[in-house]
Image (cartoon, rainbow, N blue to C red):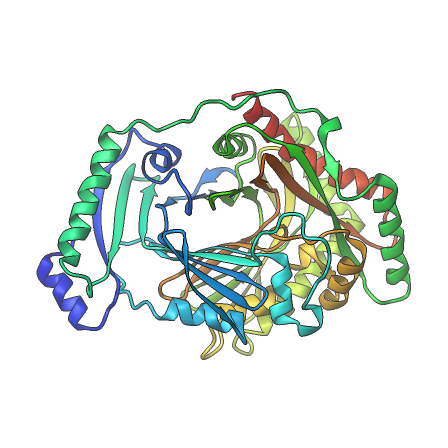
Length: 491
């Protein structure tokens, strides 16, 4: 922990948020138990990661309830402080405003802290494409969920779990302009450490658990309507408008269990590179996404397209046979190659000339239930560019839109019956120093008003079978609903 003198010296250098850190032994806790002890409430979050399909990532991030929240609908920004709207204004350029919001916080980089220790955390919904492509602005489709187009929380109190060392870093960002800022930060750390030692992981009572039945699912499409949309998309493909488009459907079901139990079930059944539980009060977001949207770290831009899937085999031999079948499938290879080309183009738009490289190509990554073909595209970030420029270049991912991207997005708008909202957007963080990491919001549930909503898509190409594409979206939805059923049954 820094001393009072060090704190004062940093304040004198112009920093307006200074991290005060305490390291505590936490080998008897898990990231989830720490979340329940310290952060279980509105505008809090838990981020975890499984690397390479099998190894838990080194750091888990527990965001304590955030005081300040930035909510954007169209070009209107609402600023909330402790649940009250304290400012509303219209923005000419929402993405530029978000970068300005981040940049107003000057935070020193102290040695020993993980890559993310605070900043802006939340999501960019699918419809924020209207900020990037004006001709896609003003979508007047039905908005079933009513969630903001984007929502970002100012995360100033964070607990970072070091899964390697079994230690926990409690981080409180103090505002040196406030009286007794250093002493107040230390008292807050005392309080958090006490709660860790003495608080039980609070758990609400079960709410009317009952088995889920597929007959309870409500879809935005009928089967006939979805298959007709696939055939219409294929007409655009045959006409040369697009090569591929991802059509999705939303499945909804009554939900009366604990949202955090859906996260627990996903964590055990389908551990993924991006696991998140975000409590936004009336809305909860629970996800286990396998796919990065785009990462910016230390001047490097990383995009990692995933396309091509097979189930895991029951034996080692069957697993290897399924891998060989996947890699030999011409349709899967063609679709993946198209997404590599799209990824190269997206990364190239914000990278220094000559720095874009394919660092992984057609690698098979294994997860608990499935295997995927994965590639990785990297580039060196261009001069005077930041994460909002990177997001503009990559959003939304080709794996949830299609190619060419803009025309595919127009087809999605025409053929899907409702706004996508959070689905297929970006979920993650933008750190104090501009580095950022976001996942594509797939394999993600949105819980609100006693209902749980998931959305799943299928990549449509010229020879797609409409019936099989319908079944693919249903299978993806069923995988998430298995976790929901486990949660509803009380785990």
